[in-house]
Image (cartoon, rainbow, N blue to C red):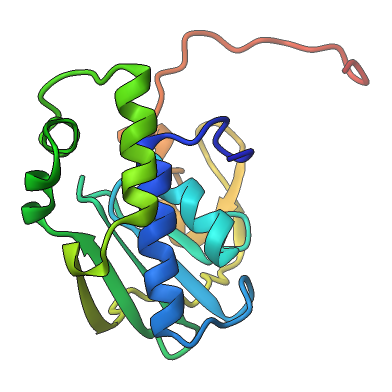
Length: 187
């Protein structure tokens, strides 16, 4: 799978789950008009992008990381659709599958390839399928832009606290080591 680099078991699982959800939705055209939600940040997002055409850049792929092997595809703007999760009973199918599902050990390349094929052909009965309605607010935040009083970067006001952006307020995903100065016009 080009988007991920290889056909990992998690990609194959995501393709199978997304295909089930798309079928339940009546096999709509991928992309616009759909919202995808994945419940883990590894593998499943790539599979959902490939099958449903949802992407983070378009705002219609949401990573709601619960660490679960589950995803949902819904129609926008109604939020109605289907959630698909791998049932724990699937672990009975093979030792490699149980090892994968419970993260007991690293699988060999041969085991991963075999598991990917198993996922792509897995009987739908090993998946829990639920008709759902999203409760997430999918409307884009359209607030005026403001300048952070600490770092000077621009950000929507709705993301700021008392005129300070979240990273400067200590809520960032990084710790700045040093600022690197570039010459104006340098690439």
